[in-house]
Image (tube, rainbow, N blue to C red; front, side, top):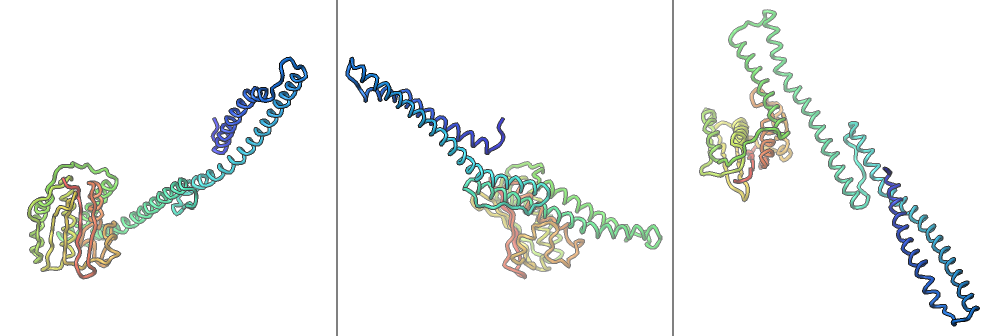
Length: 361
């Protein structure tokens, strides 16, 4: 089996040339002599005329054969040259793609190929570069995630290790406060690991989803009523939606999205302010909006807040807040249910609104 693209193209050109020459040869050698004899013509019974006609026809046939042989040689040479040029034009970018693919497989995710070939090969190069960019971004997020997880786990583990060492050496008294602190740190670790597992399953589309008709406004009221006492203790007014808005989604996951949004809003809302939850229908989508009057977001933070372990205020202790991946889980859940999640803000100090859109029933 012929595997070389250059050789395949050469064979294809030669086959086409051979077919064309064979057609011409059959037409000339089989029909040409008859037409030639008819055109030459001679008087019946004239031996000299017949001899001259036969000699002339033999010369004509021989000339045709030589012309066909010359044409065949010229066609073979032309097909060879053209096939080599075309093959080089096609094979060069493909070879570059193969070499770039090997380098990416070796871990060089910054590798790209030039996009200056014919349209089809240019589209292939653009698709390859997009794939390489996606792999580079994925690898960058993976490395960042490993570093973030190590950083986030270090604090509670250090606290646990210090207190356990103190208990072992008798420096720390095993009182109720000590046990409460240890339980708090282990709960924090458990929550972080559970959230990471949830985020991984959501991003990998491996979460079991029970898609059904869900009244998003009703779910928002249920979640809001559970959080209302905590909000009231700080003087935060919680406005919940009225009416109904039915989406095609998983009820439990919708409740998780709303809970994460509300927890985030209440965490950042100053005492005595207002947090509003609104659910509306927008065309073929149901839109959930959770607005607060908190510190707001700068333009470059609107996407960053959905990244794992991102902190709007780096000085804020994680122990006083969530695990740092609640909004990342929201976006992954929205994507898994065929929707989207994003944030809007008029700027720092002017509050923020977090949105989620789901397909309407």
